[in-house]
Amino acid sequence: MMKKYILDLTVVKVERLSEKHVLLRLTHAEQLPEMVPGQFVEVRVDDAPHTFLRRPISISFVDRAHNELWLMVAMIGEGTRRLGLLKPGDTLNCVLPLGNGFTLPQTSSIIPQPSHLLIGGGVGMAPMLYLGATLHAMGFQPTFLLGGRTKADILMLDIFNKYGRVCITTEDASAGEKGFVTNHSVLNEHFDQIFTCGPTPMMKAVAHYAKTHDIPCEVSLENLMACGLGACLCCVEKTVDGNLCVCKDGPVFNINRLLWQI
Image (cartoon, rainbow, N blue to C red; front, side):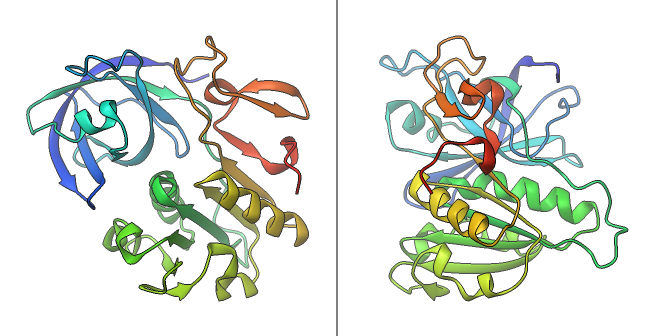
């Protein structure tokens, strides 16, 4: 089990990604701890009188060269809107790293190379970036499949393009192919592994596709998480192993462990 830290991180930059999304780039005086794709942090929201609990946010990227942690925040409530008001130099208290990450391949020396499809929808794109960058650094060439309602929902496209091929779907056809991620023509290709994060209906559809085509698939669940340590039981998910806390036993699960009706 990886050691957990409570750190006061310093805001380096707040980048507005869309009308409702910001990217927080955070650093620390000392080297940031080890973090793996799929893990998350719990952030304390200060100066928000009605926000008592920490907010769970997926690790979007770890920039080791600049000792930065990137967090994508969807500003949908008082707490997350307050995070969107942070400025460079501000402090953000974080508990990290939490949860279990995606299963990474052992080596890229296998010929032919295994092919990985990373599917993200909404803020579920965030953990796909760090996963894709990690796979790329290991010598793999991942394929990203990003979905949204409109072009405005496809975030950080320039950064995704650095680490693999990017395919896009939008419901209104304003970017990429029209429809949902499970309608994209890239699914006509062969993939050895699928990873996904996003709205539950999307992940269930992806899981159904993966099971139908006998492709190993891991999903990163977004159940409501309060403590991040498995103590409050807010995020329980029914699995073949019984009721498990997503924050402690996940958030990443192999679809064969879930009791989804697919």
